[in-house]
Amino acid sequence: MIPLAGGKYFAALDVPAQKVSRMVTEVTVRGDSVLLYMPAAGSRYAARLDSVRRELNGVWTQAGVKSSVRLLHSPMPSVTGQGTRLAPPYREEEVVFNNPTARLNFAGMLTIPAGPGPFPAVVMVSDLGAQDRDGTMGNYHLMGSLADYLTRRGVAVLRYDDRGVGQSGGSTSTATTAMLVSDVQAALNFLRARLEININRIGVLGHGEGANVALLAASQPLPPAFVVSLAGYGLPGEQTLLQQLVDEQRARKVAPLEIQAAYERLRTMYDIIRQTNPPQALAIVSNMLRQDQPTLEPLAAQAAAAQLLTPWRRYFLAFDPLAELDQVHCPVLLLGGTDDAEAPADLHLAALEKELKSVNHNVTVKRLPGVNHLFQPSKTEWTLMNGEMKPLFSPVAQETIREWLVGLEVKK
Image 1 (cartoon, rainbow, N blue to C red):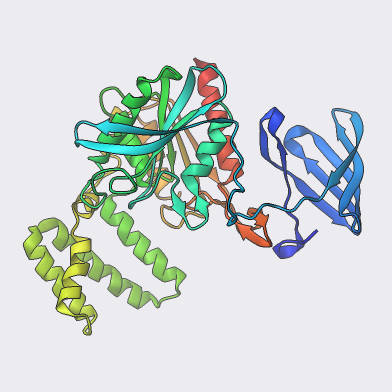
Image 2: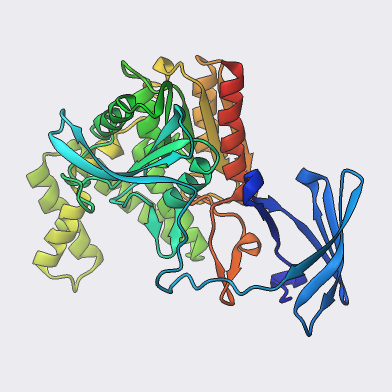
């Protein structure tokens, strides 16, 4: 057994037959004695390590019943190897649905639990920028891993490639936050036409900007049955982007006076983008960029300025995520991590909570310790695979979402 940083060990309990996955397991090691404790199951396993045979021999205790158990070591499959993915215990279907408002087709994946159904379902919506259906960032798949977790537990999931990604039409840079609502509405209608889906229990789960899109969809006619917000933005768009600049420079330990100067410079640039017409803004912003970087060529400055003048950015700078929340009456789960540097919970989650609870009595709010903007737990809880720590979606967040969805079903 190899210890993690700080001398601790990582363990998790999986029992597929009982739909148990990543159950929190506490590990105590003293010499060759190993104690595993699963608080949620009221179980413990006291064993001795045979380092030659690479196995644990001990006694499993649960509900007063004791059983002899031998655990054998098995190497983890390589995440980079080919053909290591096992078929999941649910149906996967490549789908295409149409957004008639935008005249665009979207490609995605619908995962349906085993059994006849009809099942509750969620549409997943990604954060800022063009992302694929899995929310892929390196070897981390935010949407894909959460979709797998929920589908294994009885919830159908539709996730799709953003505009301009994969086989989906359009362009993310030309689509405003408000325009993305029609994509969600098209996805909801696609699910409403499926026999396997419970038409009364279709919700939207969004991450970051996707959470704001989900809440906007809930304020429109034919709203979703529920909304799950993962690190949704609660401050106006311009304030959000400026705060991200400050937090980033503080993390880099830039001097306070330099941070203030960069803040004022960027705020001026954003005011120009918002308040002048595109041709004028392009010329002014290009000039500002060349003043900041004297070696920047004119064409390169214009290209960089154009990236700051997309329809999406012009809209997002003026976007107020609280403006239409008084029209949201469906159940809402607001989740945020205490280590979120992109949308700090004490600012964004607090703002969404205050506004929603003033008009909606079915709002649940959870702050998750140690969870960042990508809903990853602290690195000490990551998966050890091939000698490397691999990022994973917070098990606590996954279970919080599942429990809340089950609670909605019980209430009905």
